[in-house]
Image (cartoon, rainbow, N blue to C red; front, side):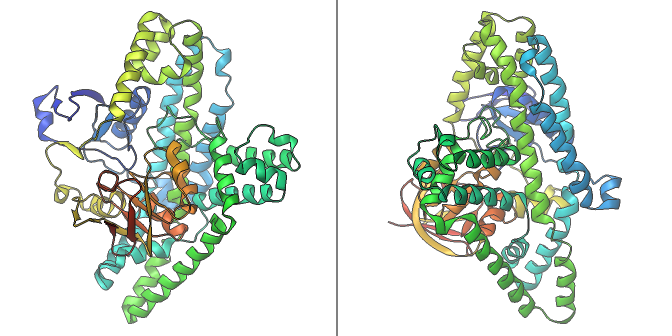
Length: 519
């Protein structure tokens, strides 16, 4: 991993001219914005060690050579996806709980830095566990998808995705947890009114307040440590600042018929309808082949969403040793504030722990200014040579098409073309949302337009009337969640957030994959 110098227009000065002839592709589905300086160390190490993908950061934005998904190890081959549920996920949970239970504040600055460095290695190993099961659950799904695309045509991928929905998974569990909080609050008029008014102080003193806060703690213990996106180590989690959760509960209270539970029932109905449609269109041996394929895809959504949950939780808990070190450096006058630790590079943070001084304060100030500048830039889809998808290994092609959703942007006469990921047609006001702290402008029925989504964004699917993303394919997190919440979704537009004006009226067709901007 290395940082390359680039202008605001992303003209790069390559340290080795040969690098300019390689296809460095930006993964905006996982890293929609610039990766904060401290996190670049972990992101780069993960990309290079686990995915064998050399990585550079230009203006903080990640660009990598084509990744290689690791083969499943013998225990996964022998035990299947039960290994994820019974071994890997519990190991990752244990890692996260151990980090959360460590008393970093009792350490000296050098001790906290050493702990952070050691835990980074463990974090990358935990992330590796989320990757070695990918082929085990995506392989059968892509086989079914390609079968249905061959037999049924262009609507095969969307039907495949719809067949997977309605299963028990972390996304559904998170939505159910928020629904439960809203139901509990609704039982106490005083508590409900305080939440809807945004009065979050003193909730425990209201009737039902202590029980509500206990349930909130349980929810945050399970889902509160997820980072906003995979590179957003600098953004506080819900566990650290529950105001975001409380605001969502208040919004569910204001629209009790539009919560996750009601939408989940509609999702199950759509899954049953899709199954009936496919079976009516296939006969004989083709129908038998389909039934065999669909029977081995049931774990796709459960494992996919659980992986994302734990990946983001790993990023979230790594904030704890970093902030502890930041507090020590700020107390020593070596940082303006603890959060500035995220604007030091990893090497600078290690040096600052041993040699705190004015130099680290100045480096963090400069890093913060750089990061704020990076956030205003519009990165290109790639650096160097344009990627040639045909040169990828055959097993990567379905993932590129249907998970990452790479394609050429298209807008013609006010119609933005993407890929249909969840059926239905909705007309509503577009709200361009780039960060979760902008989500308060999303009103019930609005069309959420964003670069990507991640599990902490899931609660917004119960508010939005439809979702449009720049990135992703039918099997991306955005597509999965839209189907779980039974709302129309268009993914992979590449340019939706750039060409759809915030506040414009748009019509989203989640089957044809079009977004029509009303004149």
